[in-house]
Image 1 (cartoon, chains in turn red, purple):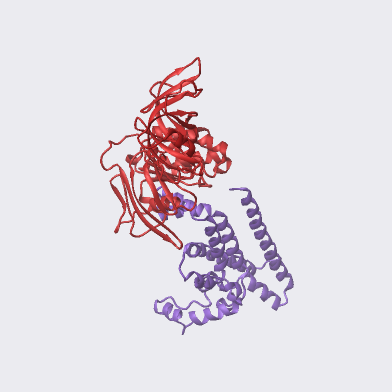
Image 2 (cartoon, chains in turn purple, blue):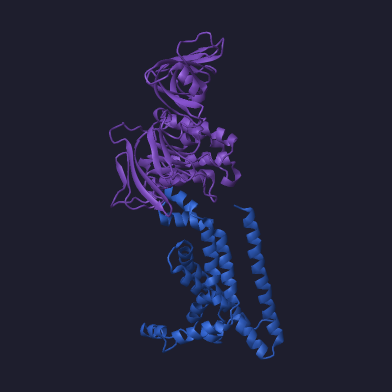
Length: 365
Length: 226
């Protein structure tokens, strides 16, 4: 597949104002033209409405949409869905029941001019692991297989923007786990910008590079994943689940203790894991409730991962007993959830140097 | 030989009428059904009701209005005359026109239901895969509505075979032109030729049963299909 040179036009600009009776959605977004952008929010926050508007499945006058330099909609123009070079994965696979898997895969592909085909059948089939299913009918597939075929079908339309509407939401936990690795590969191996609608923090942590938080039809935040997750003024932070996602480089493996070392700008963490090739990028998650703070490096502790950090800000947490502390560790934001009493005992305030003791690091791979 | 030449002519004419009518109805009924299934226009109600009228109207009422409209003083009659086509009543084309109107709901309604049961999703999926609306109609909507087409074809054909009132009003009773089986049976009974009437009536009975058997059989099968 041809990879395009990045340029200044690599952005998705979307401006929509949508009113449906009681519900209204106002979005004015500039999103990166590459990588995975998660549209995250509770049900009813407007994320699917926004995705359908971007696909042109709903027509909203007065909107503006530009994808990597191409205007799809403005005051005068409205490209109908079938003229937009996009791929769309619905929550339910929505395969055509009268066609075999292979004919489903071919549906979008054969409608492209040869010069527009940038993903070939073998590549998509291999990427989603569906080679053994080609001759089957959709009703002979499991839910997870169906969704993998739907994703491959969308890819084979050689989209310049891939839209995914909660592609895992209709699947049970086991099937989700079956598909997530394919999505991770997709992100790593194909240079197609993705807008990914989800209400699952786990999927955001694994897949997203950029995060848009939608709340009741309003854009509460839009920014780089790590930065946005560590913002104290957002509803995502104020919960028991608050945490950050950090990208690290594999530095080495300690076979004797079965520990993998990962370097990130704030230091090094070790995590219980098998060996990985050095230099490989891996994401890990650090939850706020797994980070405790001390004023000196405590080497008499069982906690393995300690990194020096500076207190950047302190905010109220979800209970009156706790506060959330935002830390900067070599430019990497971290969150710590500690008691209000500890804050006062350690006399924490912005600018103070501390040691962050990280009790648990979850590798997202 | 239970069937005389007149009987055979009536059977052939009936099949020709029903075949022509069904073909025309599939051709013109499909866009009407598609429109009825998809539109949000206020016209949906009135058009749907007009299509369904033959279900409740006595055939003689429909036949009467057709006779008046197509006749020498009716608007369509004057049009066909000025076009050099002559008058339609008591001709085979006139009978076809009447049958098309009379059997319309039996074709349009199953098609409309089939199109409605598709839902938006397959059509949207096709649009996201670069298929234009026409392309989507032929490559997705039509194949998925196939069970509806089977029902519509069988019902349209069978209902046209069974019509009597409209035929008498608009077609009359002209051998080889408008005398179909149902009229021929009536003639036999009038003439007290009960044997011939039995053969034709029995034939119709068996035919109708087989048609319905095929219809319900295919419905049972399609439930086990996709």
